[in-house]
Length: 121
Image 1 (cartoon, helix red, strand yellow):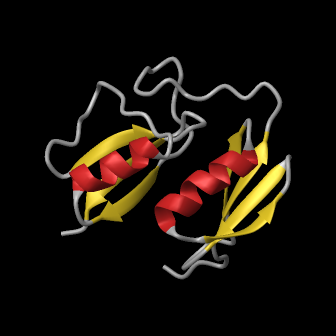
Image 2 (cartoon, helix red, strand yellow):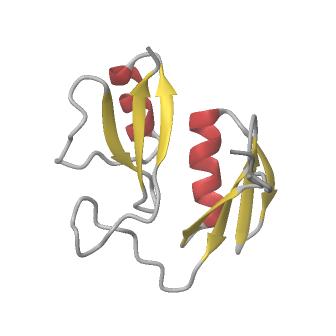
């Protein structure tokens, strides 16, 4: 099937766009190309990621069904333990519930969005 559009970017709601852009900049190594109090963006291979401030932002409470996640990013890494330690040092958190076994781990970014670090092979 041929589509008629292409992904321009992904935007994530949060309370502090600059801080979340810095967090993902440190993890992905992408350049921070825009940084203001209300909006920030990082750019790298593929579609950029934008971070928009939302007043009263409430993060999802993963994996609670009454607080569903709105999205999650899967990030390839070479070593789960190393990547997890680096993410935690940058401000991520690790929920108790971990459904991934030995292939991936669920973390939450500083705004509370879940993301997964996954073994590449």
